[in-house]
Length: 444
Ligand code: URA
Image: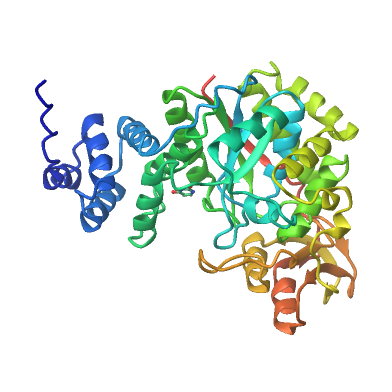
């Protein structure tokens, strides 16, 4: 039998010229570009030039979809065929105090969906779900695809880290974007996020696009543009996708730092927790149940999640997941057993007033300084350290009253000052805040 001739070499210079001059690539050209990159035919410097041309000239929706598909198929795509329930996940663009995945995933599983969640680590001022879960002794986020599927099937939820086999083109492209000033670009972000999420074998996806001082997208127009593009391209890729744009000016809930945030998530799953963490959990969870087809209306889904939360069903699922992933389940039953510092240092108000702003970015960066996050990807984190807020927006405080506590290993006046500076105190109360959910977008 005659051998098939090898495909013709990819003409990267022609592709670069096209993008430089603002011409649209065909899906076939984008597919070949990604294949050639992964095969080493296209060099990093050529791909970097393409990324900058794409950043400057933009990518159409057809190109973005083609890039998403090419990146998705650069590695394994999980099918999770043995999981019979509808499979749904949530992705957040990254926030401060964002422990929502830990609250949501078990609760949504308790309501009847399957949640195969592949999460990330903290980087910059934002925290990562894997770091929070690794506060639990023995908790393993590096499971084989077979074990991941088994736990999703048996428990309804499993939370692991990205593997080199899922969407490897994203890891390669992201590393180039990171050093060529091409991260902040909607089509490139869309392809990056969706290629990883679609590799999980999900039917439906909810995106939590954060907006504000503590977020990647600081302005509402930018967040909205990203949310709209994610929904459109995800829908074109054949999934049921919706997005919530949520406020990320002040930290979510009352804790920042890994074990502290895990404790708060446990409180939420036990029926308590701060009002905004509960609100976001119910809103995003209801949207997950809706897009997964488990509940028809958001109101019914919210009511169902609230019943489960009050009854502790989500907490039971969390405990089962922790056991299945090798973690010490006693730390879920008794959160006081989670890592903690010996003492906490109060941050006292220097004058009386009403709290009108809490700078999430500043507190996120401070948490990193205390050791809760990473400056570089290879740094290790200290699970015990972080911040606990004593007040929320709109609170009236007296001089000398605590604004927060620092859970730190060694006392430092500088850190206390930095924390204090993140709270704005004014004489008058601000107008009532509109709530955390700023906008909802869905294809239908
Ligand atoms: N998060 C991602 O996963 N990719 C991006 O490009 C930006 C944020």
